[in-house]
Structures are given as structure tokens and as C-alpha cells.
Amino acid sequence: AQSVTQLGSHVSVSEGALVLLRCNYSSSVPPYLFWYVQYPNQGLQLLLKYTSAATLVKGINGFEAEFKKSETSFHLTKPSAHMSDAAEYFCAVSDWDREYGNKLVFGAGTILRVKS
Amino acid sequence: DAGVTQSPTHLIKTRGQQVTLRCSPKSGHDTVSWYQQALGQGPQFIFQYYEEEERQRGNFPDRFSGHQFPNYSSELNVNALLLGDSALYLCASSFGVYWQNTDTQYFGPGTRLTVL
Image 1 (tube, each protein chain N blue to C red):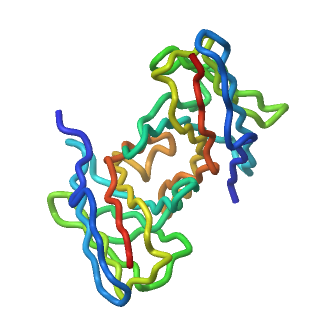
Image 2 (tube, each protein chain N blue to C red):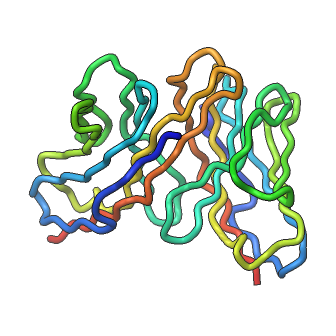
């Protein structure tokens, strides 16, 4: 079964500093991976997705993630944090079955705090 | 183009009652998935509907049931509510789930259910 581990339930950075949110996955097949962001009292918004086309994936709001098969990782980064990036971030892996379809398996989430 | 919509936004029920949550998928999408997000946790897959049938189900009791209508909208029903059912219920829609395992799920804003 597919699974996702997000290291660090809380990450705090200063405005303008590098953002690094960690995600490791476990998958028996080539994985398809996603990062979603959730602002307070809102649903999930897709940041980016990896579907094997390229290992470095660029998303919205200046975020990007690199797929590293050898490390089973899909860490999310942003060169310079902005106050508006404060939110909770979820890494997810696609658990797909040809007969039953696709569902997402999520990590526990990382809350990003941005200090001024 | 309207995204995924859910109603109601908030709901308060008492133990033992029954509740129905509603979801309208993004235009052009034919598959609806439901997730439960308890406070401080990542979303957990409940079930998924395609062609008006439940195609796969997560580890949730039979008290959780659903329906998909010909216009692809969906309902989630929960009977005999427990305190532990208090959570944010998220609906996600997608297209082409069965022949492409890279389909992207787009989430609605969620329904916040509180069970007293």
C-alpha cells in the first residue's frame, strides 16, 4: 500500500528565507505525487504534481518540488518565503488500481509559519 | 468556470442524528471522491463514485454511505452520528480516473461537521 510521511509537523521560517517541507513516500509502483496547500478554514488547493514527465516540478506561487527515486522523496521548496505562504501543506501519493480507480493517500501535513 | 462546490458550509448535529452533505463537481468532471479530515490530521479517503456507483471505499463503517446523480453531483450520508465524526468533509472531483492514473483531484471548500 502507498503511504506518505511528512517530516516536521511545524516549520517556521523568516520572511525571505528558504522554505523546505519534507515528504517521503512508499509505493510499490512508480508513484504519482502531489502537494496541496490548505489555508485556514478552506479546502485543499493543488500546488503541483509529479507524473514522471520531469523530476523537477514547478508549481504555483513560486513553489517547486524535486522527485528523487533513490531517496523516495518529494520535498517542496520555495526560495523566498512570503507572509502569504503561511498555511498547512499536504503531500499525497496516488493509490491507483486499474479496476477500482484512483484515490489519494495523504501525509499528516506540515504547518508553515512565516515570521516577519 | 465554477470549481467544486459543497453545501452546507457548516453543520451542527447531535449524537445519533443523520446528516447529508452535498457536492457539485467541477465542470467536465465525472468522478467524485469524499475525504474526512479530522482536526490536525491529513484527509482520509472515504469512498469514490463513478457512473453513479461506489467504485472503491476506504476504511469507514457502513454508517457512511453516498450517492452520485446523473449530473455527477454527489451526496455523503452519515447515520447514527458519533462525536468522532466531527471533522471537515472534503469533496474532490476528477476526470478519467479509470484510464489515466495521473488524474488530478480538485477539492471543494469542505463542510465542517460538528457533532455534540
